[in-house]
Image 1 (cartoon, rainbow, N blue to C red):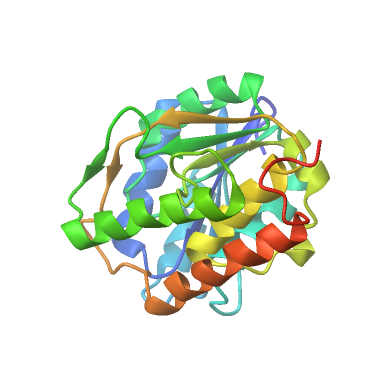
Image 2 (cartoon, rainbow, N blue to C red; image 1 turned 45 degrees about the vertical axis):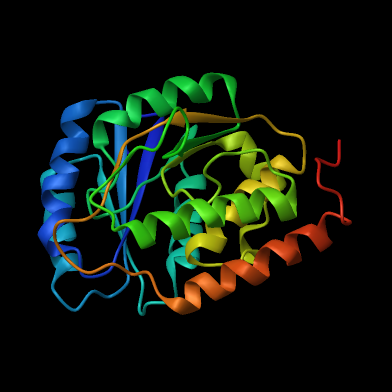
Length: 244
């Protein structure tokens, strides 16, 4: 880790060779006060090897190789665990397919000065989604309303994956107990922080669907999310508000 970096951007990858090099270069060009951790799930297209070369080239780029693909949630949790052993204060999640704009990273860090978790919302101050078919957009909007209705969380985009956690937020999370993936992982992490009464903020972002590679969305991910929100409600003692 470079001596001045307070923030780390964690990027899970599986077959993102077409995107990862340009994404990392743009991230490092945005600010010199951010490190990058690529968590690669043994990609078949050489993403892991390319990530290693980027780490050799840039002091602030690191790579965590996982032996197999066990889901987005576990990849992030492993990345968080790695980063928590270092002196980072801000931990950002970002997709590896350019759906999240690297130029937004400083805005997240700025907002995190006053919050334990900052959520990048596609639906705050209007719908800000580019290149999605209508059925995918409607699924996402309905999922957000479903989560709000069942859990009581007031956030406009609880399934979004562009986030910034402060170190303080991990004091209420046992990463070993987090098992969700996809949509439900994002919901669970936000719920764990929100229900403890920590500060959660939303900032508007523009989401652009990938131009290269293949989406990891599946019916299994959607079904898991439908079930997990009820589990979260039960864990919160059927309360639709924070404990405190």
